[in-house]
Image (cartoon, rainbow, N blue to C red; front, top):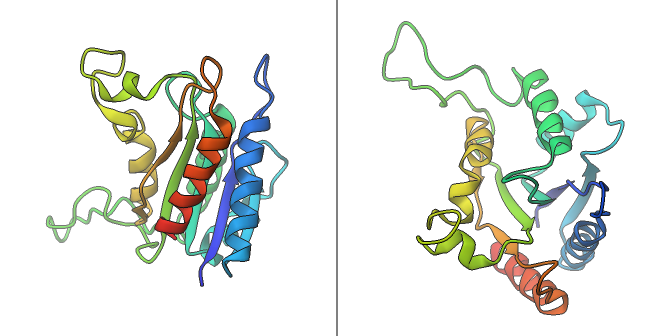
Length: 192
């Protein structure tokens, strides 16, 4: 079985308290542990030690980012975690940007050292699914992975491969939490 790191991106702010993302983290941790995986959880909104976070990434086979959609992307606490951990992780998470003056076939973004690792996005949004997939709506049919293109590229820069993204939609206007948790469990079992 795999070693799995869940990056808990829950953040209490204004009307959002982070409870739903905490529920997803707890659900994933319990289910995956029952399935025989070794699960570690780290909280992006904490006083983490950067070197410890780098080691957690190195020690795990899969990273699951559990986070809400804030202003068309990840909360700033998750971005801060990535900025600090990924940047200080040079030499352990990635060698360099991949290019070399002696061989032009080495392209930008090919210096990642984590080719044996995978990552998955698990997202909670108030936007309905059709806002992502319908070309006439807000995200112009780009899909959730199109909205998170930058996030995928950050992880792929380290050499990791994406698993299928999971998204819970309409969490305030039309919540279907029980059904969404069931879908989430099925998704985890399929992907991992």
